[in-house]
Image (cartoon, rainbow, N blue to C red; front, side, top):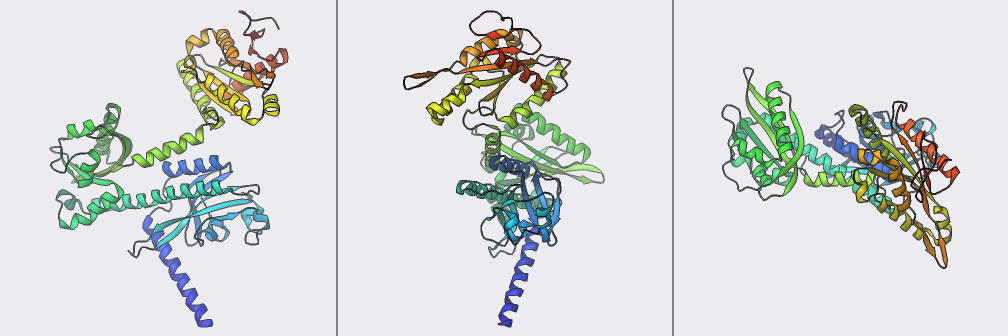
Length: 500
């Protein structure tokens, strides 16, 4: 019995040593933030409505956060880490309420900040470098909240898919690091492909990464096989440099040329992601990395790698869109609106251009839900979204703040020159009566508008003014509009403002 227990302990320590060795091979601990990982944790936090989302990597004595959202700390002791338990599992670990879980009830992160109650962590597995096919859990993609929760099956599947994306990023990053290291150490091999390069070419095909060099004296190129594949060209002689640059759209071409020149001039490594068009006209997304090779202080050669990241970029953009869009109305959500308002206020200040915000409250929406049902309410909200996406509002920014509250940012000078006229048109568009049996439920919109002027300090103040105008309009009569600081309410049925 004791001998068997000793064998199990030795096996466990051996597995942990192999896991830590694989983590070291990734060369990722204590590296700077990377937007791919940051995008995933932000998407996880918003998608699940949690306070905290992390990509956590478990070292020998600590857990370190490659990406974090909602937490200031960049690491924590391993002895306090929920993730240290999660990596021992084959699948997701869920803790609905840490205060009643004997493993965590006395944990300092439960008793004190960040006051963890709910935890769900999916292990992030990466294959080791021993060639035996075994994979090890490096850490987790986890979501954390300060209140007890349950995780629905659909949410669990989404967390698993996001974790698979993180695993792909980890393995791709490891391949990139290995490729660049080989290129720096074996520059001569990159100038003449030979039989020993076969395995490297296989790795290129697997990761969709190619290698290239530019001899600066005569601007001659050397490409590996995968660079030809990414360009959509047959393997042969690389084109001249100016021809190769034409695969980038004009704006991207200027960006790549400037980045290459900066690397040659300063010696700063290049890391650039940009648009690309193949020889067959397919639009792609590529990542370009490069370093300059010096000889007696003189730049001689640029060596680099080239990767097609189109699929990863597509997923990232889709994740970003899903994090920014209200599913029901297809308008922007509150978080996206807050970012856009701050950006547009700054732009308006710089250019001295006018700007206004319109807060829209849908009247009698609760009545529609109570009498006609939530399906009718959803159809009504979709109709509002369609009206706020009308062609005449193409240069405006519309968002759903939540429930029956909407907002419109107007920066179009033509629309702002006749803001009362715009308000009347919106009031007419938002008269959307709902039929329920023999009953017609009147639905309208009440609007409060406010201009950005010298007296408005920030976005909060601008929204406050619009909210005051909305309050005044609702007190006067629902289905009307009011502009902050101006007397009278605006009604769709009259041509001019009526005295309040």
